[in-house]
Image (tube, rainbow, N blue to C red):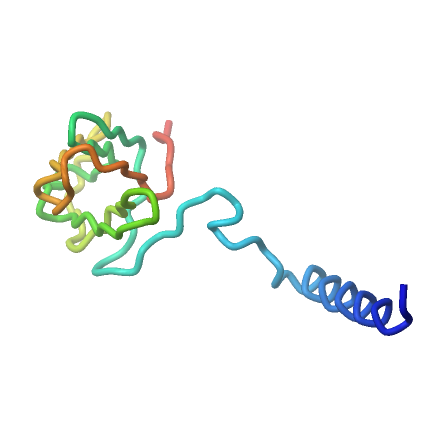
Length: 131
């Protein structure tokens, strides 16, 4: 191996080490297997669970007692092998009677502008039930 190649390899290893120590070298979402969370209106809603089937997506979310479907917006982005949806809250739930279980909200593929049978990933973070 030439001394030039060895120097380039050493410089790369030192740079990678510096990034790792500084905390800047975290894996990008696409490399870690996690879908990225899309930009959009409101804030990303943590969910208790989600299910995709029969051209419908179901979300189970925590609620302070008055969450309605219109309080949330599904942001859909095409991917190389289908689509990715991120549920975003656009209106706060300011009620004070928390739902013991979660609230189930449903969107059809048609409502989200998706063709029947589209492969769909959910990008929201999961937050288990408290208590």
